[in-house]
Every structure is written in structure tokens, then in C-alpha cells.
Image (cartoon, rainbow, N blue to C red; front, side, top):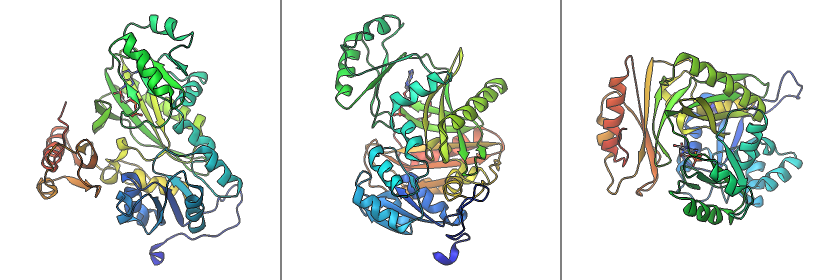
Length: 396
Ligand code: ADP
């Protein structure tokens, strides 16, 4: 693998010429790390993953593996000893452990300070709100007895959405109670693990997302805004271009830039938007490659995974021009019965990604992308292939 590398460990650092690193470590070995491994050659780096088992999705595509938990100091030290810079596949990390590593000189990108934004939803909401970024009306509580909760709930038109501050993803840690009583129960159940975000339930026109990538030198690269379709808290498909009008798209672009500057992390930042009749609100920000950017693997000149690796390894950013005017990405979420990867691959004009995970109903097992000069063909082909693969989801 070393012979494939186009960059090397070296150089005296100065502010104009950051170090360029060749060996990237990834905490976590899920599908995002797997796709980073696949993009490593394009980015001129090697990827070593911190995996919990040899069966983890990313083990098959990485150059090296350290076995251990993402929160385990010993395993993180072992990873740090084998790479030049560490990045992340998920946010289920321990910020204190990461801060201690940084104090020892380990380079984390994004840094533990920036990661706090992704790890802690309550902190994220408050920071965005304080900076004047539009977010849903919210309240942070630690129990249903919080004196501000009753007045907050009384001011809402509908039962709220209740979100765990830490540990949730793909709709886990998000509750949609149907009454005030069940909202209070949800608050107390989630409060066992930390602060809880209680927020207004919005009447959504749709959802959108944008990826911004920040380099060590501070350059920003913007991927186009996309529409993300959600069902039961999970993204079913992503469409480029987004169905936002030009003014709203420009508004998203402006907000994405503000959020990227506010967070300051290096690598991909994924900004998820709620689209409402009154305008855009920021739902959530992730500091890693994101499901709404999987279409960029075939859809743009530099994929989000290659761009993330370029950014965290200290390189300049690549071009992100789309190859086709339209792209559709459909997630494959395990149905009760497995489908057929081969049948999915036989659908013409599709790019099928199998995450190499064992079949389990409800589990994200892969995705399919299709590109084209008009919107309908890619949509029909991507869904046909995803259905053949065995997705439980259906086109909205
Ligand atoms: P996760 O971190 O698990 O992805 P999110 O906070 O993004 O959780 O919520 C998942 C989905 O739930 C959103 O994409 C959206 O479809 C729905 N949702 C979340 N919050 C709200 C809200 N305040 N109003 C309406 N729908 C919401």
C-alpha cells in the first residue's frame, strides 16, 4: 500500500504550509470508515481503523486494524502509535479521553473541542441559538420536574419532539410522543443518560442537507444542497439537486458557511435542515462524512470521503463539481427477508454499495446511487435496484 501513497509524513510545520500526513486513523469501523478506506487511494493516504470486531464493515477496506472500543484509552493509544492523524466514523466517543490524547500531542481532526458540537445535542442547539442561527424552539431539561417545562409545553401547538442529548443516531434517541403525559415519560427515560432537548414539532415541507468541508488552511468547499427524504427518523433517499427554490438554496448556502465557521472543525461538516413554510431551520450538524453525501462517490469529481481524508491529512481540497445534473441515492435498510445483491447489481445504470454487514431487519446494509440528465430515470433505477437488494423502505 505504501507505494501507492502520493504524500508522505514530513515537513516542518509553519502556518502557511501545514504538515501533510500519509497515515489516517479512523475511530470506528462502520460503513463511513469503510467508504473512507475505499477512497484512501484517491486521497493518497492509508487508513487504519479502530474496530470492535474483525467483522466490522470497514475492516475489509482498510490498510490496518486495531481492535478495541472507541472509548478505550489503550486502544486509542495503539491507534495513535500507528497513524499521524485520527478522525472519526461516529460520535459515540468520550471527549475527556480525547482531550487527554490531544494533551499528549495526538492530532485529532476534528478536534475534541469541535467534536463536542456533534457529541452533545444540547450544547449544539444552544451554541447555534446563541449565534443567531435559526433552530426549532427548544428547552434543555434534566427531568420532567424542571420548572420551565410546563410553560414551554403549554406554549406549543402540538406535543413536542424529545431528544437525548447524547448517543442518538438514525432516529434512536428521538421520541415523538402523542400526548403531554407520554412526553414527560420520554423526558424522564432519556434523562437517565443526561440532558434532554425538548423541542417544537414542526410542520415540515421537507428536509435538506449540505456538506461543507474545511481544510487545515481554513479553506471551505461546499457540496450542493440536497433534499433528504426521511421516514420514521431514518433517511430513505437523497436527491440532487434539492427541490428548494433558488432563494432558499442560497439561504442554506449562507447558513452552512456560518455554521462551518462557528464549529471550526476540520473535515466534512454535514448540516441538516428542516424546510418549513416560514423558512429553513438547522436541525443538526455532524462532523464526519454523512449519509446525505454518499451520492458524491460517483456523483462529483471528489467524493465526500476523499475530500474528508484530504482535509484531515492536511492537503488542499479537491473540486466538487457534479458529473450529471441529477443524482438519486437510496439507502438499503434490511427488510424481514434478505434480497439479492446480484439482482440489485443487474439493474442498469446503478452503483450498488454493499456494506458487508450481516443481514438484520432495520439495519442499514448498503445504498444505491443512480445519475442522469433528467430526474425520473435515476429515481426509478435507484429504487428498483434498492428493492431488489431487499430494502424495507418504499419511495415516498
Ligand atoms: P438523528 O440524530 O437520530 O438523525 P434527528 O434529530 O435528525 O435525529 O431526527 C430524525 C428525524 O426526525 C428528522 O430527520 C425529522 O424527520 C424528524 N424530526 C426530528 N425533529 C423534528 C421536529 N422538531 N419536528 C419535526 N420532525 C422532526
